[in-house]
Image (tube, rainbow, N blue to C red):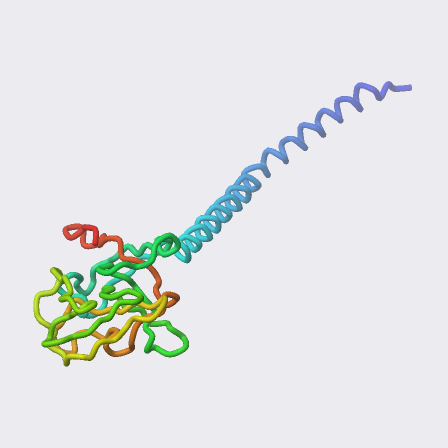
Length: 204
């Protein structure tokens, strides 16, 4: 009677080699699938982190219009510091980005303006000049007197801020003279610096 032990052992070895070969041949596909999965996870993670940073920490905005000339010009890119508002309220002279109070409930439109008066201040325009608490406002950033009409003294309410555009030519800026003082919850963040074009990079 023939001895099947050696033949069976030889068959098992051949079978094992075939199985390893099949695994080896399938390996590149599994590696590609695994690599693709890792890449997708990385992209999703980066997108999620950037979305959170954009929502709570900072924002990149582009200037539209001429209401902030000569400080800001159309097309310039701004770095908006959002988290600063969690530690410090806007001050006189700060350049901020805010939801347009006149844009309706959606508040989809944004404006960039300068804070000229803070809660408790009395603001007025007299003889085409800005007055804060009865004293002329210090505005080294403007290049002309206020060409629009004067307005009587107004007291800025609690948690509100009076904003104006740096462009004081007639009809050049839609600001608190038009829609009133801005509530704190409509302020998106403070403009930290211009980052584009590179030739104009500087802090505000």
